[in-house]
Length: 372
Image (tube, rainbow, N blue to C red; front, side, top):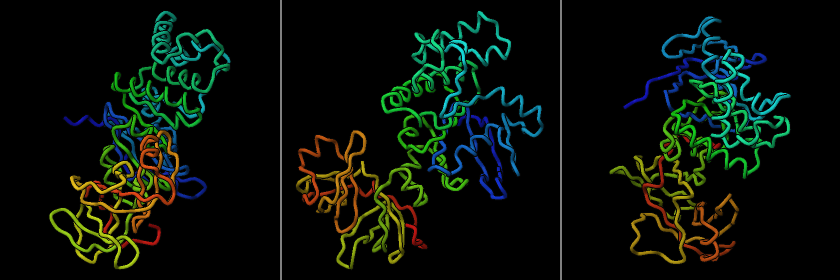
């Protein structure tokens, strides 16, 4: 069953210094979903978030909350009381953690007894119950962000805006907070908008992605849809589709195509998911986690694509290693530390790479420009 639309944005435009910084034809936020705004620095994520929160002067467009237009000042002020925002750098007062969390409740006239119980409950839920008496400005980065989240959640917002909330945290604090926030969002069924440049954060928290560049939306859709079926070369590269193969299609039909992406007429052919006419220039993407490496070919494998290659580079990528291969074309794969050692993967090593045709997705056909 489709979730009801909570917030609708239509034809949002914003200018700064005479230049247009936001151009969003349409974007919806549904009740109970987490929408991740993804893009590099300067893509317009924070600008769009401020616009959706009703905090940015617009040069055009409209917002609707539960079907009602937010045109007048009174409507926007009422809307702002039903949402809250958490920034990358939490605002901490010269007060205790408990007093900081209770700030919004106190401004809304909630009684001291109700404030105390609500603050205690959310502090415990976010793992800072033991810090309630501590001065807020003496907290670590992770503790401060947990305090900011508790101050937001305690208000029971109908929309929670999270603007790069993990950007200033070290790895242990970030991982712990990601786990706890993901659990809380799922348990409460909260509606949230998350701004991030990190696909891992989006994958762990979001139901839908909206990938941005230069103040525009390039693609919006479900998590798996955007990750595995990007519609644009920029989107493909940004969501981690590290192998992008361009070349002429040599055959097509039955939902599959073959292309020759390598150097010269004797380059190997790749079988991919998609439709194209022979001779059409196509762009195909492959996620590195869908590539399997072995020392020898596996005759029993169902993979339509199997290529001998040599390791060019080995790069650490968090808990994994990225292996860059020359198979007559560039190919990237992820392996664990154990596989790295067992396969002896180092520059110059021979290896066999394989991936299924369904792991190679058509991104674009024909008309490719020099940016790809």
